[in-house]
Image (cartoon, rainbow, N blue to C red; front, side):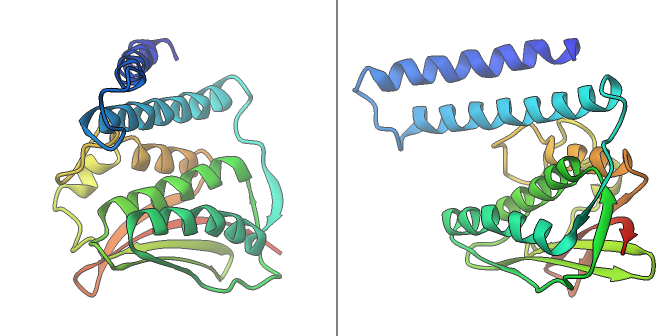
Amino acid sequence: PGHMAPEHRNALSTANLALRDLEAGTLPVAGATGTVLKRSLTMLGGLIERALSEVRYTVGGGPKHAIFSLAAFIAEAKAGADLAAHAQGCTFVAADVDPLLGIYADRDLIMAAVSNLLENAFKFTHPHTQVSLNAYALQERILIDVSDHCGGLPATLTSTAYAPFAQHGSHRTDLGLGLYIARQNVEYQDGTLRARDVRGPTCVFTLNLQRHA
């Protein structure tokens, strides 16, 4: 969308400046300049993902629904999450999924939503704790839980966390688009995204979607 073009340009410009400094060979990649480059690329990735989701919905005629295996979907999400867990120094588990369960949804949009929730979980979970992914059926719905040990949800979550560019806590590594994109992608398909605290330090985000045999 046109209103996001300046944000794309700013993030790309900052990344190019950081890359130019690193190419000079006088600064370490692991230093402040490398951090700026990583942050800019993360920003740019989030902006592109949001733009693609909006264009696909408004220009492409809405979500492209299809029936797909829940077990295969979770296996694909797990493959990427394993790498992220290793990079963040935490553990990741994904519960076994009934191979007979299916979802009727736009697979790409749901994968983007789950990926954003997992990224959010890895970012906020306390060091050396666990992030988990669990998918199961409840009557005629499919529920996908992403859990972490962030220490509890902020009181402002329900009113601000899903807004674009909202950021919480001490993390400023992205534009705060993750939860906004996740909820938007789920609601495009008549689903819901809910957050809750479980047993104090555990935070759970749950996607609620249409089930298909």
